[in-house]
Length: 307
Image (cartoon, rainbow, N blue to C red; front, side, top):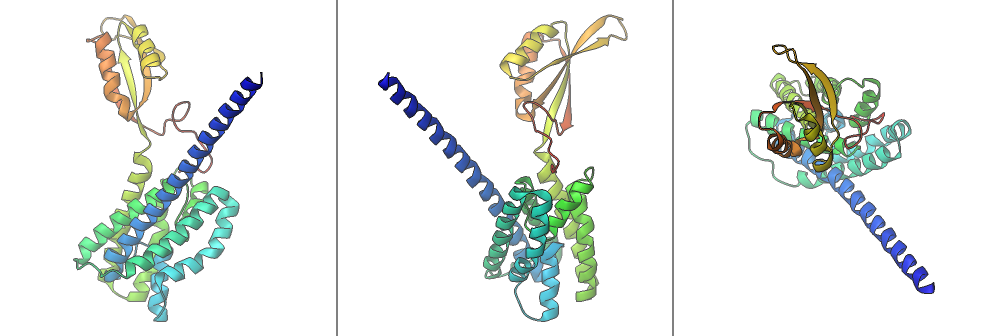
């Protein structure tokens, strides 16, 4: 009996250790995603945009305007200080995870900006700077948003607006808020060419941001018409670990009633599904289409603060 108890305790301790290890790894990957996103944003801003007086909007753009008007200061430090009141509001409205993630993002962004400011600016044409800088900023922002955090500043305002405008892609909300900053940039620098480049940067940034945030959330929906529909549905259930639904259909030419198998799968399972269906019924008719945001068992779960 004592041996069994000791064995059970060892097993429980082992399970608890494995669970703690998984949580730690998940936390580290979450922090890494935020830090890498901030690094990419800072790289695009410092190396491609700032040398041409182009900003990607947001608080960093406002900080850039402030530094220009004041004649001194650092964009990174101004951004960090201005974040404090926005953090208090965002943490209260969105939650503790967002608050902690945004705090990490804000510190990481300011730190990376200080680091990349030490690097020599790349000698590029303004148009190339606007495009590549916008793309890097879009990728960086997208990674941070995917982690359920923000880089602070106007990103907190964007996440708050997303709670209100739930049907609007987050990139469009960023575009609206950043357009205001671009207008202020026009008044500050009085350089119409620079402002037009800002417009290009904003467009590229928001398009890339939406691509990063939403492209990872596409699945596939398959409609399969076959006489062997029961075998196909059973194979999908047991071999792909996906559910299947029978829809009632009728052939327009033959008038015969048919069963249509409806299956929602991950994109990486697409080839496997086609091989499975054709292996059962080579004459099966398969219709595939993209499906955005499949919610439910085996897929994403809906939450109020979803992007």
